[in-house]
Image (cartoon, rainbow, N blue to C red; front, side):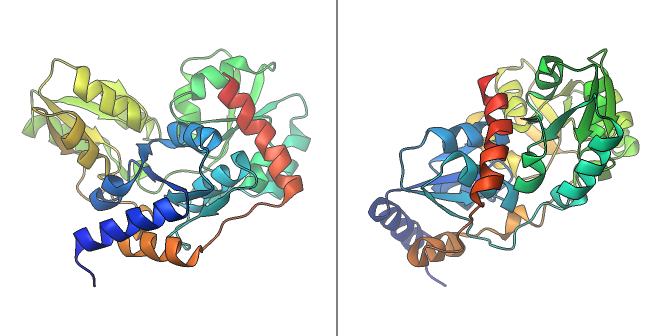
Length: 302
Protein backbone atom coordinates (compact mmCIF):
# COMPACT_ATOMS: atom_id res chain seq x y z
CA UNK A 1 0.00 0.00 0.00
CA UNK A 2 1.32 3.42 -0.91
CA UNK A 3 1.86 6.12 1.67
CA UNK A 4 -1.29 8.28 1.92
CA UNK A 5 0.34 11.58 0.89
CA UNK A 6 2.03 9.98 -2.11
CA UNK A 7 -1.31 8.52 -3.16
CA UNK A 8 -3.01 11.89 -2.72
CA UNK A 9 -0.38 13.56 -4.90
CA UNK A 10 -0.77 10.90 -7.59
CA UNK A 11 -4.56 11.27 -7.58
CA UNK A 12 -4.30 15.02 -7.97
CA UNK A 13 -1.81 14.68 -10.81
CA UNK A 14 -4.01 12.16 -12.61
CA UNK A 15 -7.09 14.36 -12.09
CA UNK A 16 -5.26 17.26 -13.77
CA UNK A 17 -4.15 15.05 -16.65
CA UNK A 18 -7.67 13.70 -17.17
CA UNK A 19 -9.35 17.07 -16.63
CA UNK A 20 -11.34 15.33 -13.93
CA UNK A 21 -13.50 16.63 -11.10
CA UNK A 22 -13.88 14.51 -7.95
CA UNK A 23 -17.28 14.58 -6.23
CA UNK A 24 -17.79 12.99 -2.81
CA UNK A 25 -20.90 12.48 -0.72
CA UNK A 26 -21.02 13.57 2.92
CA UNK A 27 -21.00 9.90 3.99
CA UNK A 28 -17.63 9.08 2.44
CA UNK A 29 -14.59 8.47 4.62
CA UNK A 30 -12.50 11.43 5.75
CA UNK A 31 -9.58 10.82 3.34
CA UNK A 32 -11.95 10.55 0.38
CA UNK A 33 -13.80 13.72 1.35
CA UNK A 34 -10.45 15.51 1.70
CA UNK A 35 -9.34 14.60 -1.84
CA UNK A 36 -12.60 15.74 -3.43
CA UNK A 37 -13.21 18.98 -5.30
CA UNK A 38 -16.81 19.06 -4.06
CA UNK A 39 -18.35 17.41 -1.00
CA UNK A 40 -22.08 17.59 -0.47
CA UNK A 41 -25.47 15.93 -0.33
CA UNK A 42 -27.31 14.47 -3.30
CA UNK A 43 -28.78 17.80 -4.41
CA UNK A 44 -25.48 19.69 -4.22
CA UNK A 45 -23.63 16.96 -6.09
CA UNK A 46 -26.33 16.77 -8.76
CA UNK A 47 -25.92 20.50 -9.33
CA UNK A 48 -22.14 20.13 -9.46
CA UNK A 49 -22.42 17.32 -12.02
CA UNK A 50 -24.81 19.37 -14.14
CA UNK A 51 -22.57 22.44 -14.20
CA UNK A 52 -19.07 20.97 -14.44
CA UNK A 53 -16.82 21.69 -17.40
CA UNK A 54 -14.58 18.72 -16.61
CA UNK A 55 -14.17 15.90 -19.12
CA UNK A 56 -14.30 13.25 -16.40
CA UNK A 57 -16.42 13.00 -13.25
CA UNK A 58 -15.13 10.74 -10.49
CA UNK A 59 -18.11 10.03 -8.23
CA UNK A 60 -17.25 8.89 -4.73
CA UNK A 61 -20.62 7.57 -3.68
CA UNK A 62 -22.99 4.82 -4.76
CA UNK A 63 -24.27 3.74 -8.15
CA UNK A 64 -27.45 5.82 -8.40
CA UNK A 65 -25.41 8.98 -7.76
CA UNK A 66 -22.99 8.16 -10.56
CA UNK A 67 -25.94 7.39 -12.83
CA UNK A 68 -27.40 10.80 -12.04
CA UNK A 69 -24.10 12.43 -12.95
CA UNK A 70 -24.02 10.52 -16.25
CA UNK A 71 -27.60 11.58 -17.01
CA UNK A 72 -26.87 15.24 -16.30
CA UNK A 73 -23.51 15.31 -18.10
CA UNK A 74 -23.96 13.50 -21.42
CA UNK A 75 -20.72 13.15 -23.32
CA UNK A 76 -18.58 13.13 -20.18
CA UNK A 77 -16.94 10.10 -18.66
CA UNK A 78 -18.36 9.18 -15.25
CA UNK A 79 -16.31 6.89 -13.03
CA UNK A 80 -17.51 5.10 -9.90
CA UNK A 81 -14.32 4.01 -8.09
CA UNK A 82 -16.19 1.43 -6.01
CA UNK A 83 -18.03 -0.23 -8.86
CA UNK A 84 -20.01 -2.47 -6.54
CA UNK A 85 -21.23 0.34 -4.25
CA UNK A 86 -25.01 0.12 -4.41
CA UNK A 87 -27.93 1.62 -2.50
CA UNK A 88 -30.25 -1.07 -1.08
CA UNK A 89 -33.14 1.39 -0.93
CA UNK A 90 -32.75 2.21 -4.63
CA UNK A 91 -33.11 -1.50 -5.37
CA UNK A 92 -36.39 -1.73 -3.43
CA UNK A 93 -38.39 -0.58 -6.47
CA UNK A 94 -38.15 -1.38 -10.16
CA UNK A 95 -39.43 0.45 -13.21
CA UNK A 96 -41.97 -2.31 -13.82
CA UNK A 97 -43.30 -2.06 -10.26
CA UNK A 98 -43.66 1.69 -10.62
CA UNK A 99 -45.51 1.38 -13.94
CA UNK A 100 -47.90 -1.10 -12.33
CA UNK A 101 -48.54 1.29 -9.44
CA UNK A 102 -49.14 4.21 -11.83
CA UNK A 103 -51.75 2.17 -13.65
CA UNK A 104 -53.71 1.83 -10.41
CA UNK A 105 -53.52 5.56 -9.64
CA UNK A 106 -53.71 7.25 -13.06
CA UNK A 107 -54.41 10.73 -11.68
CA UNK A 108 -51.43 10.70 -9.30
CA UNK A 109 -48.08 12.36 -9.90
CA UNK A 110 -44.92 10.38 -9.20
CA UNK A 111 -42.32 12.09 -7.04
CA UNK A 112 -39.16 10.06 -7.15
CA UNK A 113 -36.48 10.34 -4.48
CA UNK A 114 -33.09 10.69 -6.14
CA UNK A 115 -32.09 7.45 -4.38
CA UNK A 116 -33.43 5.36 -7.28
CA UNK A 117 -32.15 3.78 -10.47
CA UNK A 118 -32.11 5.64 -13.78
CA UNK A 119 -34.89 3.36 -15.07
CA UNK A 120 -37.16 4.33 -12.17
CA UNK A 121 -36.40 8.03 -12.63
CA UNK A 122 -37.36 7.65 -16.28
CA UNK A 123 -40.85 6.51 -15.22
CA UNK A 124 -41.31 9.41 -12.78
CA UNK A 125 -42.65 12.94 -13.17
CA UNK A 126 -40.09 14.73 -11.01
CA UNK A 127 -37.22 13.88 -8.71
CA UNK A 128 -36.53 15.19 -5.23
CA UNK A 129 -33.91 15.00 -2.52
CA UNK A 130 -34.36 15.08 1.24
CA UNK A 131 -33.49 18.78 1.13
CA UNK A 132 -36.31 19.77 -1.25
CA UNK A 133 -38.89 16.96 -1.01
CA UNK A 134 -41.63 19.14 0.52
CA UNK A 135 -41.13 21.88 -2.07
CA UNK A 136 -41.19 19.35 -4.91
CA UNK A 137 -44.40 17.70 -3.70
CA UNK A 138 -46.09 21.08 -3.38
CA UNK A 139 -45.00 21.97 -6.93
CA UNK A 140 -46.73 19.09 -8.74
CA UNK A 141 -50.12 19.65 -10.36
CA UNK A 142 -51.87 16.73 -8.69
CA UNK A 143 -53.65 16.19 -5.39
CA UNK A 144 -52.45 12.61 -5.13
CA UNK A 145 -48.73 11.81 -5.08
CA UNK A 146 -47.02 8.44 -5.38
CA UNK A 147 -43.84 9.00 -3.38
CA UNK A 148 -41.04 6.52 -4.01
CA UNK A 149 -39.18 4.68 -2.61
CA UNK A 150 -38.66 5.86 1.00
CA UNK A 151 -41.69 5.40 3.25
CA UNK A 152 -40.17 7.43 6.09
CA UNK A 153 -39.39 10.46 3.92
CA UNK A 154 -42.87 10.16 2.38
CA UNK A 155 -44.52 10.22 5.79
CA UNK A 156 -42.40 13.17 6.86
CA UNK A 157 -43.41 15.12 3.75
CA UNK A 158 -47.07 14.23 4.41
CA UNK A 159 -46.91 16.30 7.60
CA UNK A 160 -46.44 19.46 5.55
CA UNK A 161 -48.87 19.09 2.66
CA UNK A 162 -52.59 18.65 2.11
CA UNK A 163 -51.90 16.39 -0.85
CA UNK A 164 -52.56 12.69 -0.42
CA UNK A 165 -49.21 10.92 -0.21
CA UNK A 166 -49.03 7.28 -1.32
CA UNK A 167 -45.74 5.96 0.07
CA UNK A 168 -43.76 3.08 -1.36
CA UNK A 169 -42.56 0.69 1.34
CA UNK A 170 -38.83 1.19 0.84
CA UNK A 171 -36.42 2.46 3.46
CA UNK A 172 -32.80 3.36 4.15
CA UNK A 173 -31.10 0.50 5.97
CA UNK A 174 -29.09 3.00 8.07
CA UNK A 175 -31.72 5.58 9.02
CA UNK A 176 -34.55 3.10 9.52
CA UNK A 177 -32.56 1.40 12.29
CA UNK A 178 -32.51 4.42 14.59
CA UNK A 179 -34.87 3.93 17.52
CA UNK A 180 -36.83 6.05 19.97
CA UNK A 181 -34.79 4.47 22.78
CA UNK A 182 -31.52 5.60 21.21
CA UNK A 183 -32.74 9.19 21.12
CA UNK A 184 -33.84 9.08 24.77
CA UNK A 185 -30.57 7.48 25.86
CA UNK A 186 -28.52 10.03 23.93
CA UNK A 187 -30.49 12.90 25.45
CA UNK A 188 -29.82 11.54 28.93
CA UNK A 189 -26.11 11.31 28.20
CA UNK A 190 -25.91 14.76 26.61
CA UNK A 191 -28.75 16.85 28.09
CA UNK A 192 -27.49 20.11 26.57
CA UNK A 193 -27.18 18.73 23.05
CA UNK A 194 -29.50 19.58 20.18
CA UNK A 195 -30.86 16.51 18.41
CA UNK A 196 -30.73 16.66 14.61
CA UNK A 197 -32.01 13.76 12.53
CA UNK A 198 -32.47 12.95 8.86
CA UNK A 199 -35.99 12.81 7.37
CA UNK A 200 -35.32 9.20 6.34
CA UNK A 201 -35.69 8.29 10.03
CA UNK A 202 -38.80 6.64 11.47
CA UNK A 203 -41.63 8.95 12.64
CA UNK A 204 -41.07 8.18 16.34
CA UNK A 205 -37.42 9.26 16.00
CA UNK A 206 -38.38 12.43 14.16
CA UNK A 207 -40.93 13.25 16.87
CA UNK A 208 -38.19 13.31 19.52
CA UNK A 209 -35.77 15.49 17.54
CA UNK A 210 -35.15 19.23 17.61
CA UNK A 211 -34.37 19.56 13.91
CA UNK A 212 -35.06 17.39 10.84
CA UNK A 213 -32.61 18.21 8.07
CA UNK A 214 -30.75 16.90 5.03
CA UNK A 215 -27.07 16.21 5.52
CA UNK A 216 -25.94 19.61 4.24
CA UNK A 217 -28.73 21.21 6.24
CA UNK A 218 -27.32 19.50 9.31
CA UNK A 219 -23.88 20.97 8.68
CA UNK A 220 -25.29 24.47 8.28
CA UNK A 221 -27.33 24.08 11.47
CA UNK A 222 -24.37 22.87 13.53
CA UNK A 223 -22.22 25.75 12.30
CA UNK A 224 -24.90 28.43 12.83
CA UNK A 225 -26.68 27.26 15.97
CA UNK A 226 -25.85 28.85 19.33
CA UNK A 227 -25.79 25.36 20.82
CA UNK A 228 -22.37 23.82 21.44
CA UNK A 229 -23.30 20.13 21.45
CA UNK A 230 -25.27 18.08 18.94
CA UNK A 231 -26.59 14.55 18.59
CA UNK A 232 -26.48 13.65 14.90
CA UNK A 233 -28.97 11.11 13.55
CA UNK A 234 -27.49 10.12 10.22
CA UNK A 235 -24.57 8.15 8.76
CA UNK A 236 -21.42 8.76 10.79
CA UNK A 237 -19.34 9.92 7.81
CA UNK A 238 -20.86 13.38 8.14
CA UNK A 239 -19.02 13.95 11.44
CA UNK A 240 -15.76 14.42 9.54
CA UNK A 241 -17.08 17.42 7.65
CA UNK A 242 -18.72 18.84 10.77
CA UNK A 243 -15.40 18.73 12.62
CA UNK A 244 -13.76 20.60 9.75
CA UNK A 245 -16.41 23.23 9.07
CA UNK A 246 -17.86 23.80 12.54
CA UNK A 247 -14.90 24.27 14.89
CA UNK A 248 -15.75 24.58 18.55
CA UNK A 249 -18.84 22.37 18.22
CA UNK A 250 -19.06 18.84 19.60
CA UNK A 251 -21.11 16.28 17.67
CA UNK A 252 -22.11 12.85 18.92
CA UNK A 253 -23.48 10.14 16.62
CA UNK A 254 -26.98 9.02 17.55
CA UNK A 255 -25.52 5.57 17.00
CA UNK A 256 -21.85 4.79 16.31
CA UNK A 257 -23.10 1.82 14.30
CA UNK A 258 -24.86 4.06 11.75
CA UNK A 259 -22.49 3.08 8.95
CA UNK A 260 -23.40 2.64 5.29
CA UNK A 261 -21.06 -0.13 4.18
CA UNK A 262 -21.58 0.78 0.53
CA UNK A 263 -20.51 4.39 1.07
CA UNK A 264 -17.40 3.12 2.79
CA UNK A 265 -16.34 0.96 -0.17
CA UNK A 266 -14.61 3.93 -1.83
CA UNK A 267 -10.95 4.29 -0.87
CA UNK A 268 -8.09 6.47 -2.06
CA UNK A 269 -6.61 3.41 -3.76
CA UNK A 270 -9.83 2.88 -5.73
CA UNK A 271 -9.96 6.55 -6.73
CA UNK A 272 -6.40 6.26 -8.02
CA UNK A 273 -7.11 3.07 -9.93
CA UNK A 274 -10.27 4.51 -11.45
CA UNK A 275 -8.38 7.51 -12.80
CA UNK A 276 -5.49 5.32 -13.97
CA UNK A 277 -7.67 2.81 -15.83
CA UNK A 278 -10.63 5.12 -16.58
CA UNK A 279 -12.99 2.50 -15.16
CA UNK A 280 -15.40 1.39 -13.74
CA UNK A 281 -17.38 3.64 -16.05
CA UNK A 282 -21.08 4.32 -15.51
CA UNK A 283 -23.29 4.78 -18.55
CA UNK A 284 -27.03 5.15 -19.08
CA UNK A 285 -28.72 4.35 -22.41
CA UNK A 286 -29.97 7.37 -24.35
CA UNK A 287 -33.73 6.60 -24.15
CA UNK A 288 -33.58 6.10 -20.38
CA UNK A 289 -31.25 9.05 -19.84
CA UNK A 290 -33.46 11.43 -21.82
CA UNK A 291 -36.56 10.64 -19.78
CA UNK A 292 -34.72 10.53 -16.46
CA UNK A 293 -33.01 13.83 -17.25
CA UNK A 294 -36.39 15.50 -17.67
CA UNK A 295 -37.46 14.40 -14.18
CA UNK A 296 -34.18 15.54 -12.62
CA UNK A 297 -34.19 18.89 -14.46
CA UNK A 298 -37.72 19.63 -13.26
CA UNK A 299 -36.33 19.35 -9.73
CA UNK A 300 -33.25 21.47 -10.46
CA UNK A 301 -35.40 24.23 -11.97
CA UNK A 302 -37.15 24.63 -8.61
